[in-house]
Image (tube, rainbow, N blue to C red; front, side, top):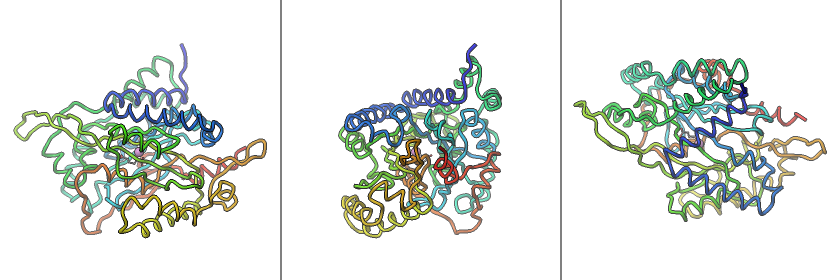
Length: 428
Ligand code: OOG
Ligand code: NI
């Protein structure tokens, strides 16, 4: 009987989710197809340069998913399932006072944390948790009803959680247990065919469509699955040419002449998916919901805290300069501001201590790829796919949350991304 180790479990899980999501959201398959074409072109142009931030094997398989849960208990269970796959919570994101739209969640990303595992398969899942205690969104009465609803549901069967605990303890599973584990895990993230209670969903949707997507239904589902592309501008044009409506811009650093840093992302709009609804009189009627979308990303070099500060300053400067101008001017404005304010070469980025680099055995400097997310881009991705506006009530009872709080909730330490990059930078 064969043994499936943690790394292989993760690769198989990512693959299964990809098959599942492609069956549920066929436009995702188009995105993957176009990503592959774009990557082949970039590769044909310059094989070595194209692979400076990851081998083409890694990049072709690379995906991130996004899920949203309701409670600390659910988040801890998610943590157990991902631990079985060698994925650990990294980073704390608070999207509750995000611009352009607040979202009533705090988030982390589950991902591998060491360089070898990232190279083998970097699968990661951006995981958000509802903050029902935040009075800016939920009244005490609604919090109570929401908590009641969430407490009554079970997202993951016990058998799955037991297999996950075994996989974590034994660094893998026997072939037949692995199959069962993967089947149960993937099924837990499929879109449910259970009717949605129309009135309850609508009540939550008036506050935030993310709140409704999480607390208005009895199951969790994958919200999007994102492939990695080597030229996101090319991909954006190609998708539009294929008639797929993209959001109005690429989030993150602009296209410019200097090094690629951090993360650039864009998405196509949430598609209407058929769902069943239970009406107040008990009848079930067909309807649709728009919550799931397609996203793609290009990854660049990880920035040190100083580099990150520079990034935030430049983005704020671009916002100021672009305010009131035609949106089509923004890319040009951004490229100029970056050319003046950011190191124009990798060597300068390294020398000025703004990016993470490591030294290869031959003494060359090699950039370290950014493995995480950007709160502002995440907020933009959420917002571009939200229906309705979320208005904050008076700023009282904000329910403070931070990485320590989240570690407690998950029952696992949330890693600091900078510590991980710094470690990678000194490792031989
Ligand atoms: C997560 C949005 C954030 C990203 O790539 O920044 C995200 C969500 O929509 O649940 O996935
Ligand atoms: Ni995403």
